[in-house]
Length: 140
Ligand SMILES: [Cu+2]
Image (cartoon, rainbow, N blue to C red; front, top):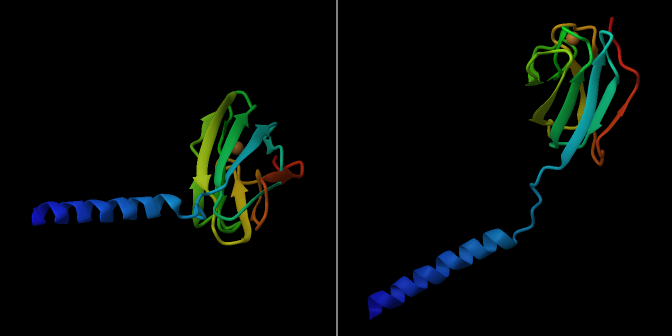
């Protein structure tokens, strides 16, 4: 009988912990951002991409250059030494979706095509950003 009470108490304890876990505020849920990004005529179609810190970023990447390999990669700086995300190279004409998490630290980072480093731009992490792009992009 005493043993049964212990089992019941442990049951209540486990249930309480599970319940507490479920009701805690979801402050750590990453914001989902979708960006359309295109490579055409050996250039990207935008020069800045702005997202909120720690966002889960989906880049729908459309390579419009027939037979030409391009990718999308994000680095800490324009030296392209420390990568944040390196997308697989795809030959045009193809569309692929890249997914990665943006840095949690606010700042101006760098994106480029690894095959054609002159195709590049700024990847900006900004508090309150909703996922926006601007510019006409650089290339060859
Ligand atoms: Cu390229």
